[in-house]
Image (tube, rainbow, N blue to C red; front, side, top):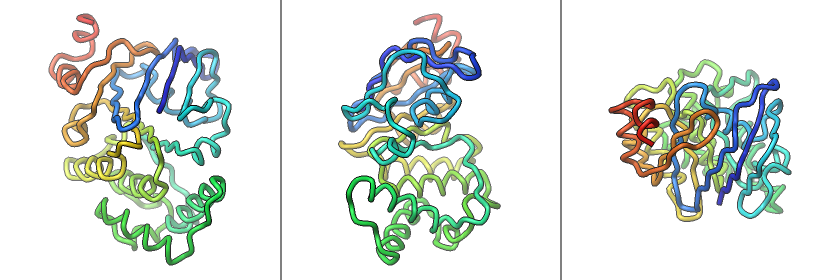
Length: 249
């Protein structure tokens, strides 16, 4: 589903990714862990097409297409979703308005009919219920006045409504308490645990993986993947730290 080969990238002329190679199959949740500054967020931004990140080598194939040759909106329409570590606030724009416009724009790009107001509200209520969020929250401006946990729940609702084929989630567990962490983890399972979908789940901590239970775990360090294993690899990192595990690798 996602095939990355020898990917290198810079930001402000600083080399961050150094020949990163990784594959994620359909139906797979693949966790990426690594120390600060390893390149985890850079990887997510490059996949999402964020301006300022220059690819200097390698390739990324997404569902048989050249991802790097697409504009960000084309990547979204093709089924790629990027979840941010720090979701931004958009004053003056309600979640309902934002999400309906985003969904219908993607449906139009795929040659599908846009949803009516009633059809969209039915879908929004269904997906919000999965994350324990009521419609009053969705009527508020995007992330304005939301707590850290509420922002992450709202972003998971957004993912559920857009229904992507593949989600890149950049430290979705950042800033979450235990209860919010469980709700978000259950939401990821409910929305993306599917034989036709895939997830690249970037995280610092093993605790989210207790709920999501990834199929594979990779360690990213110095801009490349240095080790890949099963869920037990995350438990070793939690117990021994990055230095010990990478030294053993």
